[in-house]
Image (cartoon, rainbow, N blue to C red):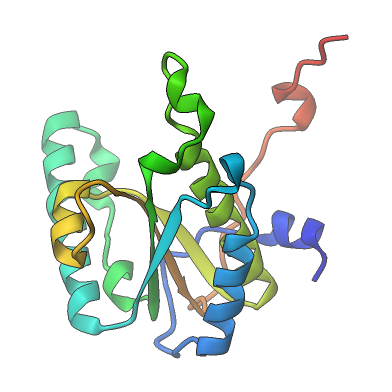
Length: 190
């Protein structure tokens, strides 16, 4: 699959088959992640690959707690219908942990210190596209409290769990969501 097809065909998946993902394929996905660009090549990411059912269930419970809290605070009705069960049913969760100390020179600029997040986001996109090329479904998930997730996974307090990539074979067809034309979102300054 070429990169353009992977970009156009990739969709968020919230329903996974229970089939395990081969370690060789997980390895390819992680290799794609580490080839992402990063400030000063500091590679500010770590990846926790979770397949243990009890740990996935603990992550799901934290996400459910966070979802209920946000529903109460926001009043957003969609949160009342949003199920986080895929966190325990996806065969693999890859937790992407960023190190703010590896942000690069931007940490000395006012409002800076965010480039480690940008690098981790690029690594996540590489994982999503590689998984698509391998015929797998993914979801880039961020609805959790970082402090609670740190405790569940034993993450050092100086590092930030930035996202969870849910990974597995999709259970059914993935819905294509509409996208705006680039001309609607781009301004050329000439």
